[in-house]
Amino acid sequence: MALTQTHLNTLVEAWAAGTTSVTIDGKRVDYRSMRDLETAIAVTAKAIGAANPLHPARPVSRTSVTKFSRG
Image 1 (spheres, rainbow, N blue to C red):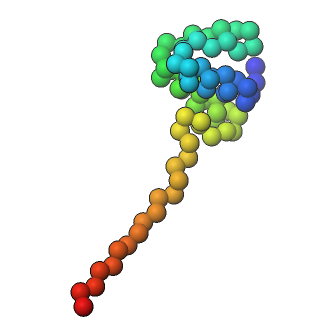
Image 2: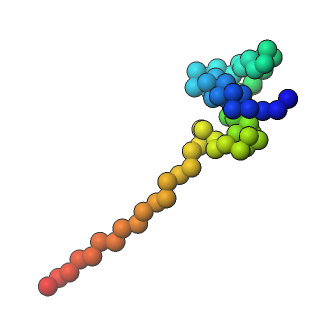
């Protein structure tokens, strides 16, 4: 069975609903914990070449310098 974006969407919807039970292609999978479901989401995202929707890429941090003058 090839993983698809639909599988990832289903897993993320279950995570957002707070449930650990997912039905994909007529097969029900019960994850033991939310952590296991999060792992399944990460593995599925990586398998299809997508970013993990639970941990989006962090924006580049910006550094600023403040200059003071006494004079």
